[in-house]
Image (cartoon, rainbow, N blue to C red; front, side, top):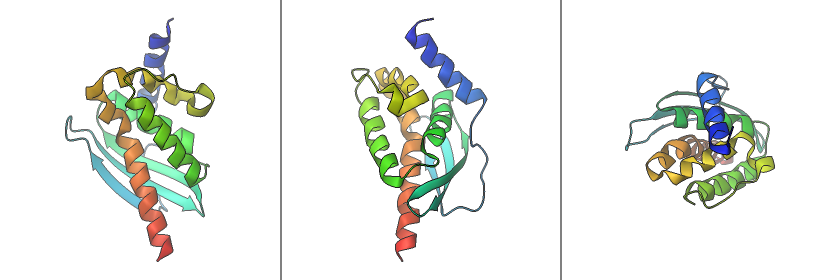
Length: 148
């Protein structure tokens, strides 16, 4: 099996068995994002425990890439500190904009390395980024509300 086949298998596995799918309470913020270029939709909730992302839950409709990316991202960030997620978001965004020129760190990205191949297809990059942008917005909302 070559690396592209492995990456496709990871994406399909997460699409079929979506981790953390289904909206859960309690939550500190909820956002709804739509990818206007293809119609993928995502409603995402985040619960924080101080500066730790305690839970991420979601409901989404869309392609295998957007759904798998949400599942993979949720696995990666639950239990991590907000600054860690923000750094991971920046690195994932950079990888997705690299058109396949950045080799991701497997230890840092875990299953998210599968999306390195997606970065070669500009029309699909927004699909992979949908959940990441939604979580960034939800964390921003939740931390802004805590500051009030």
